Image (cartoon, rainbow, N blue to C red; front, side, top):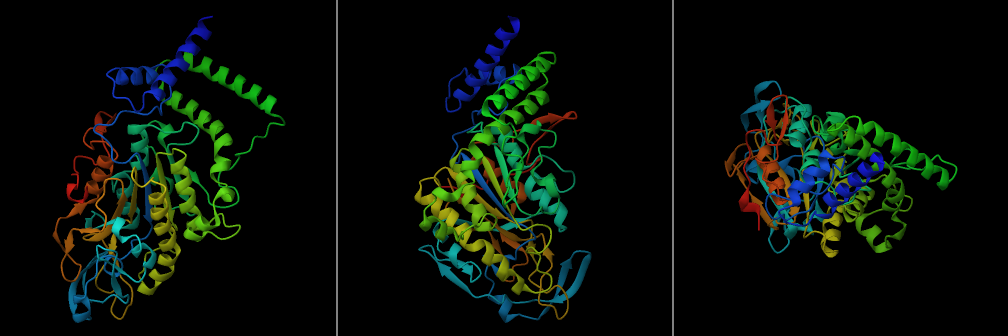
Length: 465
């Protein structure tokens, strides 16, 4: 009898926490805490610090470091001064290397006249929705550390990913799907650490989706009948409840149980999400999804829209992996196939969200780990080395000023001369748009309060509407 009573209470608190997501009532926080402490859903939606402009995030990571001076930050002076020798920072120190002009033509796009290189003709079509931040900088010019920094705010010690922080801070919009999904064909530098929850409860960890024939392994039930499957699940649930009752207050245990609940929900919901059969031919053509395609970046972008449509809080798209990526040491022409792979799908994603009315509350962040040098990788070379002192990232969607370029580098693209934006500032701005004060989203671990932006970060308010 006592077991039945406690189970009913747990179910009530779970529903109470989920049901008050949008409310601002004074009882919200006590009920949310009660739901958490008494076995309620650890992904119950939480109240924001301030009104959110964006409810969901699509985080696009272009692995390897694309070149700012060849994409979104034109530097005609490089052509004038090409092959002039400058003191050049590189991976292991400083050398004397020649400046190199971009081999790509820049043109203005949209009513805003935002300049982009010929590498991104389709993104040029949505220029008026893009905010190009030209003054990003980070701390370390090695791939592994910089990829971690762009995801976790820490270039040295792996910490929770931005998607995990958002899951922890905001909860989910659909308990049948993970709150943080990562579409990743090939792992980036750092591997799964870039979407890890680290010391946050494990339910907030990103769930990796493998583009291909089986994006989610073991999605189909092995039970020979639905009736038997239901009985198995009921028995497992009762066993888990008894185990949890003997360990009150164990939030990690609650998180593990929730992961099984989500898995069960995914078996019902996910197959339809990944099935593009109901998409119109016009939509498939917009993204560039071909017949029987279930792996391309175009397919991934369309699935990202469908995941957002079905209530996933954060969807990350990882373009390529730690090999054959944007790391163009040998020849800048290597940027062409990389841009061809992502240009049309990313433009389609933004325009598709917009025409469906979803861009109003969806934030799209397109970023990389660092930039590339305005000089050659070596004497006589045609490529560029890593560069952390200045690079470019983009934002689009909810609360962002479209058709704008923020920040400025010097005439060669070497130094930031106006409005520098550290990676911590980029993260603080994303959290702000999601309704979170980056200084207040903390988690106490090992005797100190951690946060995504460490002890730094400022919201770049000039890029907000």
